[in-house]
Amino acid sequence: MTYGSMEASFVPATLSERVRPLSFLSQRGRSGSEPRRASGRRAKKRFRRSVVRRADQIGAAEWERLMPKLVSIYQERFGGLDAATIADEIVWRGEQTHLVLLYGPEGELGGFASFCPQRIEVDGRSYHVFDSGAFARKGYSGANERLARHLLLGGLREKIRRPWLRMHFVVACASPAAYRLLARNAACMYPRHDLPCPPVWLRLVQAVSEARGMQPVEGEPRLVHHEAIFRDPVRSSMSHTHDHDPHVEFFKRINPRYTEPRLLLTHVPLTLGNLVASCVPALRPAYLRWLRRPKR
Image (cartoon, rainbow, N blue to C red; front, side, top):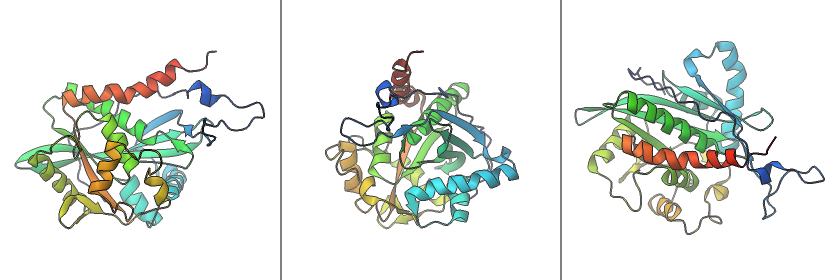
């Protein structure tokens, strides 16, 4: 899906490109086995490095090597889309698409994110809205956190440089886990169980849905249909880990058929106050991991 070019160029700020894992996760047992959590489950790998690339600056030969890896990462989580559709709609999001390549502890490509700004007109006003998504192989965690940090820090820098820009982040959340992560990091977002949604923001979300060619669910403009399907719908439900979390409960209440899947369009207004308030909790996990890094 291709969108028109934008006047605003969004280049995310670099943030702790090498993040060390928590010390108790980085230590192997005496037998050399993989680290495990206290519950006995195998600990997930965290991304150690991220590289941001402008998609239009990647050459054809590099795309041929890179695209099969990105398609493979996406297809570990979702089915129902062929490689060409994934390349055109998931990886490439428009003329100003940025790729965030995520590398694991051994330098392997374990995940990626992509985002692109687009201009949306609502009620005679122009808004800069970011279309994005993040995906990781099984056994990894932190893809959405990396994307959130790049967008929040880059948005804060752009807002300070050009405060008149009306910047917004609209993401289609496919699971309770994705929605909960956004709700816990964004100081102000919609929809949310404890915040009423202003009508103008609902109209903005509807305009974004139309611009992206999404098919809304009848009677609920915040929900859209999608052709992809979960490989592991039980895992995506968070039914055992966050049963009583208010964000998870709210997501399941307004989007009970999300495993079909139906996506929830979630909106974060990137005002200066929201960016500053949101950057602090988004950066805290990386700062704590840096403090607990193994001493050399």
